[in-house]
Length: 219
View 1 (tube, rainbow, N blue to C red):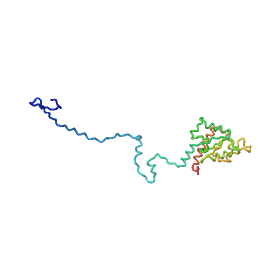
View 2 (view 1 turned 90 degrees about the vertical axis):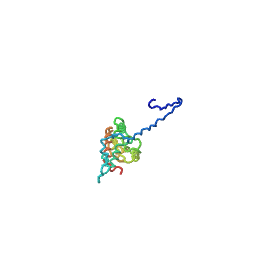
View 3 (view 1 turned 120 degrees about the vertical axis):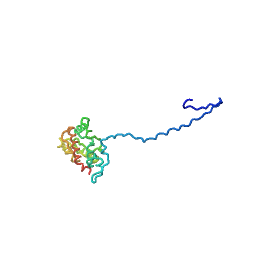
View 4 (view 1 turned 180 degrees about the vertical axis):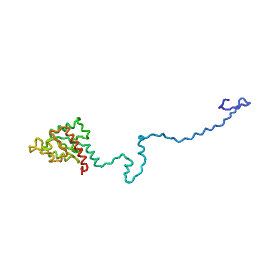
């Protein structure tokens, strides 16, 4: 009889056989499951781990400065003024030959986008008016109307001698002796006509003026 087979008992009767069942073998108990340990995943910035530990609250000191030491506290008017000076939208309209130099300033060679300056064809969304050219008494009401259609805060750049004081046409009574007679002017650009570099310099001067007068803007 082979090991592991069925036991057979032989009797005197050659035709009868008796089968003896083997005792049942109980299965071995399953091993107990050990708790699964997750691998340690390193943080994205392990050097900042000390900053993420809880801190003690110190009376008299702002809590956010203790939790987030990199947060800057600045006045609201400073943030608004920085946003305004970095997103000037001059209105695209011209009156005379100075407008040609203004158009040249808007070209890709001078790249006004690096200053956040985007020309806009509507006074409803513009905040800078460039008076480029001679202002006649017939054109003065239209210039004043465009200025009144612009939302506050708004600024005006007088570009060239004609817009500033009449230029070579100052002796004619039909020419306005300066656009500041009808609307307030913030920056004057000399020249007849001024080059694009002069107009860019006036934009930079206007940005500095916005930052200096940030406390009074909009009041």
